[in-house]
Length: 161
Image (cartoon, rainbow, N blue to C red):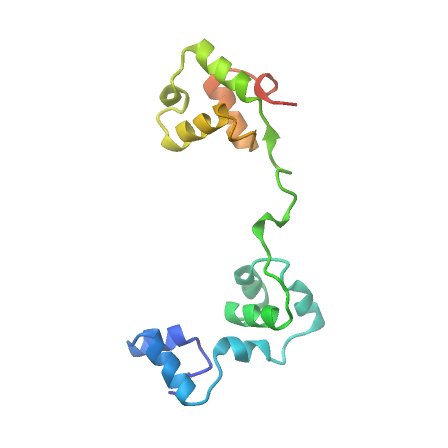
C-alpha cells in the first residue's frame, strides 16, 4: 500500500476498512517506520520551530506550523521535551478568593435553597455546595458575578480580599 508510513496506521485502517492492528502489521511487515518515527527525523525542523516544542499543546502547534500532530509529538519526544500543560500558567492567577462562611450566611439570610440560588442549574447548585463546604476557595470572575446576582450582593461582600 503506497500510503504506509506516510499517514498514520489508523488512517490506513480507516481507508482500507480494517482494524488498526492489521494496518500496523502491513507496515511492519513491509519494513516501513511508523509515521511518528518518520516525523521525528524530518529535515524541515529549524531551530525556531524546535524552540516552539512544548510551549503549547502539540495539536495547536501542529496547526500553527502546518504539519501533523504526530510529527510534533515525535520530534518533541525525540528531543526529550515534555508536553505543554494547560496549567503551566501560575495556578489560581485568574481566580478571585471567596469567603465560604459569608456566602453560606448570605444564602441562608435570604432564605435561598441551593436549587433557588443556582436557578435550577445542576452545575451551579453543585458548585455552590462545594463553595459552602470550603472545597472551592477561589472562583473566576464569571462565577463571582453569578454568585453576586444570586445572593443579591456586591463582590466585596463575599470575596476574601
